[in-house]
Image 1 (spheres, rainbow, N blue to C red):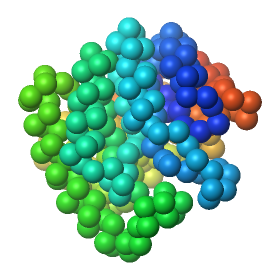
Image 2: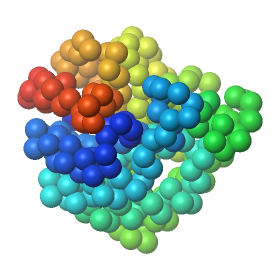
Image 3: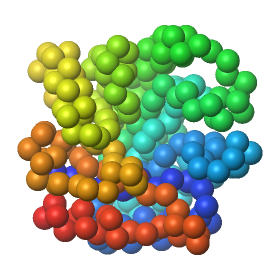
Image 4: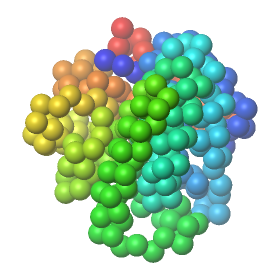
Length: 250
């Protein structure tokens, strides 16, 4: 089982992300991820987060030094165009010299949508997600072929009608959420739709999911446990949950 950390992109100076990524890598994580929102989930609609892909480029040197995966979990296809995403991911993958996880989702966070004047219905957004993920698959395959990169597409989310079936069709991996029973149900659905094609599986644990039984998640078939961290309010991240996860996984 692999352990990852996801940093939220607000409330911390941009230059700090390189050093916290280095600290996490020194602890023994297998992957460092950023989320991708224009507006933080906490605070007001007028708050602003740092731009995720700029930060990812700055963190590539850490990934190269420690041979850890770098990734985004997730970039919404509502405001990230597949062709641009594929090229951005290939660029960062080449800079980091290792694997890059291009996590994508269907979006729908109201404050992000407001910035882009996105007034699509949920059904319209999900239909566009299907088309967008297919386009992304072709674009990523092209970039990997051209540049010798190893960008893997993950889909984040656990909707049974569109998200999981679309991941089974076009992605290399899937990332769901706790509780374990819900995650396991979605994994069974995923396996039934992939016809034996191997896929990476991940659970993203939020700060609300404090109780973590690593052995139970391993038994459930999880390839990755990724712990999301929000800023601690004084311009930094508390890495103690990551240290405990890494120790338990060993």
